[in-house]
Image 1 (cartoon, rainbow, N blue to C red):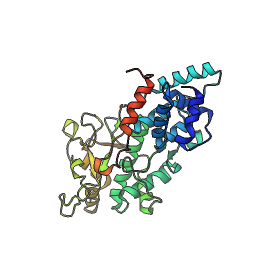
Image 2: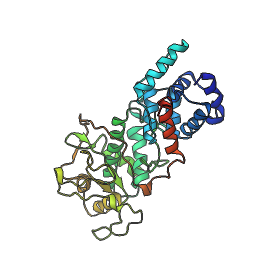
Image 3: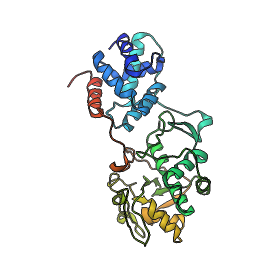
Image 4: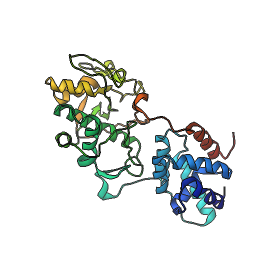
Length: 332
C-alpha cells in the first residue's frame, strides 16, 4: 500500500488530519499490503480502541504490538514490525522512527502512565485503586488490597514492558478500577505496605481478586456479584495443594488463587491481620516482601470474570482476521 493511499484513508477513519512521521511509519508497517478498503476497515478498528490508538501515536513498535495483545487482537511480533518499518524507511530514504524498546524518562521511574495521564505509583495510583476496589473495608483488609493490587499491576508491567510506559493502564474492571480521588484510609494502607509484594518461590503471583460472596456469619452468604466461584480458600495449604483460581489458567505456577474482598473485610473485622488475610486466599507459603523475585513468566494479562468485563468490541474478531491477512500480505 502506498503512503498516498494510506494518507487518503486516514482522516475519515481516524478523525484526524495530522499524523506524525513516527506514527505514519508504524501504521504503514502494521498494515503492509492490502487495498484502501482494507486499510479503512483496520484503521477504524485500531483507532477506536484507546490503548492501541495511544500506542500507535508513540510510533513505538513494541508498544503497538503489546497494545494489540492487550486488546485481544492478533498481532505480529515487534521485531517483524520493526523489520518492515526499516525496509520501508530505506526504500523512501527517510530516517527510521520506530524503536523496539520503550523506556520511560528517568524522572518518571516512579510513575505510571494511565488513561488519565501520568500518576505517582505509590502516592496516587495505588491509593486510588484501593479506594476504587474496596475503599470502605477494614484497615487490615485495605492493606491486603494494597499488596494484591500492587502485585497485580507490577506483575503485568513486568511481563508487558510497554504497559504503564507507552501503553496507558486502563481504569476498568477488565484490569483494576481506580477512583477519582483516594480516601485517607487507603492512602495510609498503601503507605503502611509500601513496596510489599506477594510472591511464591521468588516469583510474583498473579494476585487475582474479586468481590466474592458477602460474609456475615463466618461462611459465604449471598453472592450479588456472582463472583464467589472464582474465590479460593487456601488457609494452611502449601505447594501443589494450593487451589488455583479458574479466573486464570490453572496450569500456571503463579496462579495461587483469588482473594474475596468481602471475605477479606470480614476476616479483618474479626481480628485477622493483613498477612493472615492474604495467606487465607493465596496459601500458607505466600512470601511477602519488598524485593521482586528474579523468576519470570510468560503470560497474558490476568482477567476479571466475564460478568465483570465490558462487552467485546463489535467486529473485533473480524478485525483480527483482517489484520492477520494483511500482515501475511494477503496470502492464505
